[in-house]
Length: 231
Image (tube, rainbow, N blue to C red; front, side):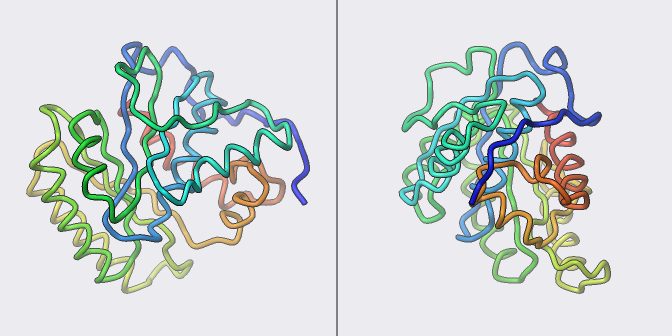
């Protein structure tokens, strides 16, 4: 059972005045289902809220996982609160970060939201099938993104073994993709496959808010800080 608890602000969180005052739209997604986009979007929203921002969430995924996570967080009374996701993009970011989650197979939604994105965050599982899916997603992104929009790839749910061949090969493939695109990069941070992320879903908490999850907290905060540099 989830237990309400107060959040602690860690040293790596950027203060609100470091964010772009104009706001940014962040699309989290890929073509491959199960890449962890809803989990990443939720954790990033909580991280931003702890940093003093008031992120807006947009849940365009029929599964509504992101909406369920926010609902659990509200039920347990965790702080800081995160506003319930909306079902459509706002006209303007209004000085805040807007995080958009959509269904992996919903090409129509992708085509609608990508042109509004300032940052396209692409979680990729370490497998050849996910690399192929990412290549196809990248074609869609490149034909739809607005001028100046940045694409950021990262490996998600990697095996804990540092020398994992799949992780190394996926990183190499992502770097090759980024090298062929303008305003594209690969984050050095890798998110490992950890039970902490499963627990965070049931508890409505960010992994960095959970007791005893030091490794998960550190790796996500490294990722969030790198993402925040574009926000």
